[in-house]
Amino acid sequence: MSGPILAARGLTKSFGPRRDARRVVDDVSFSVGPGAILGIVGESGSGKSTTLRCVVGLERADAGEVLFDGVPLAGADREMRRSFRRDVQMVFQDPYSSLNPRMTVETIVGEGLDIHRAAASKQGRRDRVVEVLELVGLDATILERFPRSFSGGQRQRIAIARALAVGPRVLVCDEPVSALDVSVQAQVVNLLLDMQQQLGLAVVFVAHDLALVRHLCHEVMVMQHGVVVEDGACADVFDRPRHDYTKSLLAAIPIPDPERDRARRAAAAVDRRSA
Ligand SMILES: Nc1ncnc2c1ncn2[C@@H]1O[C@H](COP(=O)(O)OP(=O)(O)OP(=O)(O)O)[C@@H](O)[C@H]1O
Ligand SMILES: [Mg+2]
Image (tube, rainbow, N blue to C red):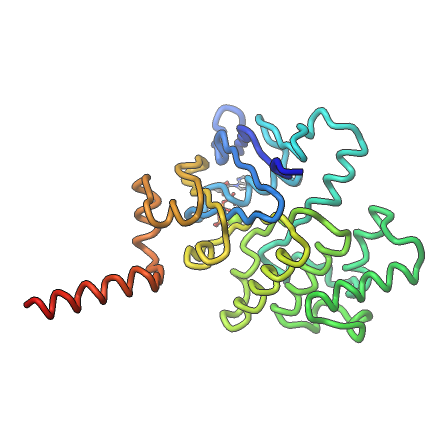
């Protein structure tokens, strides 16, 4: 399969009363192929989360369509919709609210296996839960514990294990590290990257941290007021932003660029020598 796994075409979503509706996602299109990472950036309120929520079906778009393996979901049969729900999994920003505090780790991580009837037996289910916990750096000793006894970073690992349990092909991550302590952000990012590479996942990754997006993503899409103002290969957009909004985003956050720094230092040295 070489085409995109997941694509959106012309997604549009408004909120508010009909007379006074505010369009927060306006004609948004993107696609992501197997093994690719698409970053979505833009200021707070630009419609990033709403876009993702429309894609995974947590929100109903007013217009536009979502394509899975090139097939529009709207016209897809039950089987296709079922595999979409299994193959496209989401990781949310806040692991404090995304994990049910009354469920044990085993129930949380295993829930998807039940929903999708992906485990043949109770033991098979437990084995799979342990397997994905180990994949994310946790182990079987925590099966009976509840979310409250874990740190933010551990909770996000559990949330990632839950997403991976059913063997998805796409991971949709809405600022998966923004709520975490800076000291564990890198660990969770590395874990996601590791999983992406090991499992060949396609990833859609919303983030505020442009340096992180540049480091992580192959493609990037820049949103402002619900509209995609610019998109393309990450290196192109970051090195040669065309839109003023992208330029201002980039200017606001210094992005370390060792190569450019080296070039700048070399040029400065030449200047000094010739002076
Ligand atoms: N259920 C809702 N009802 C009404 N308005 C909403 C709803 N969900 C989102 N909005 C509004 O839509 C706009 C876009 O919100 P969204 O959460 O998609 O932005 P975002 O880009 O994810 O922002 P952030 O970076 O802060 O997460 C915001 O103005 C928000 O207040
Ligand atoms: Mg958001």
